[in-house]
Length: 220
Image (cartoon, rainbow, N blue to C red; front, side, top):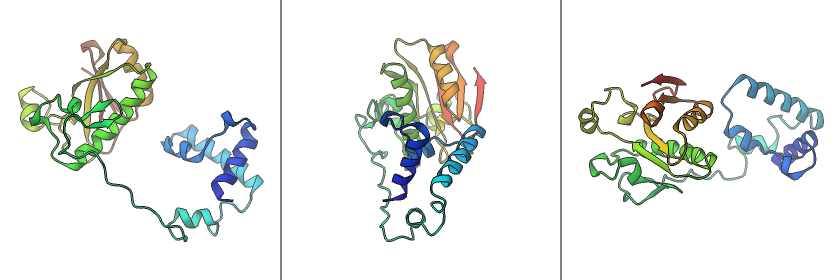
């Protein structure tokens, strides 16, 4: 039995035997942001696991050999991104957001580097989360990628996240059709760890990431 199964059993003992209460470690790690309460919870979990299986966190365990890529199991290469600059504007970056929505269907706004596509994909995945929270109502993107010429034309900041000019830097402005923009802004404020521009008074929310991925907020 692999280590993940053992840990799941420990979690079941701690949380109850009902299937709907069971957690999986990859779900916990996916949302781990080194926040104090998360770190405290992991410490509690570790202590609970060690009470049941004292040796399970040792480096000689099979799960750790797989984790460190020194075991017999082959580690698959991460697949290349399907979202590339040359895709048609009809290409779905995520289930409900197309490439064309990020570019406002303008050819001059087409991405020119793969890193821009990768950053946009991260933003779109989060937008899908926002969309689902508000009942699946459509996301409307009012500004996505702005290459330098476009950014100058709209009087954008020379440091705008919309330029996508560095790895991990990018932004979209959006609203949700039929949903109070202030409710959307509040939800993003509570669940997005990076850049947020309070654009609700102007009818949009600015969602972005900048170099170093700091948590930053500002008013328009």
